[in-house]
Image (cartoon, rainbow, N blue to C red; front, side, top):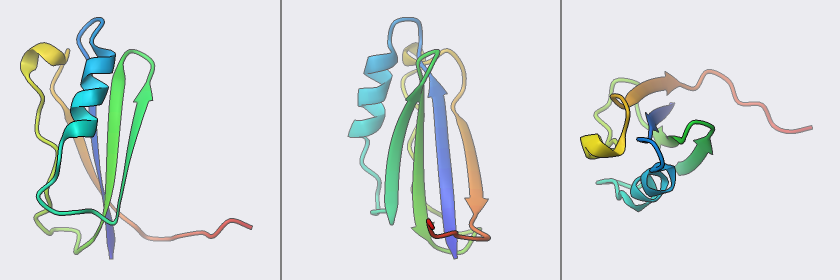
Length: 88
């Protein structure tokens, strides 16, 4: 089974680049199958990691950054893959 962990944070005013670099530099205790990092308007940063594990497995996650670096609490979601489509 594939599990995707999503981590999303919004940077404090003017600190978007710093939050992005902070997230990119974080090492996890184990290596995921895949890891992608995204940025979005309003200085938001999203990191998605994919794992070959049961849905309820304990998996390493990115920590919370320093409170001064973000405008609100980090949002986290966990998803279980139910279907994979190959490009045509």
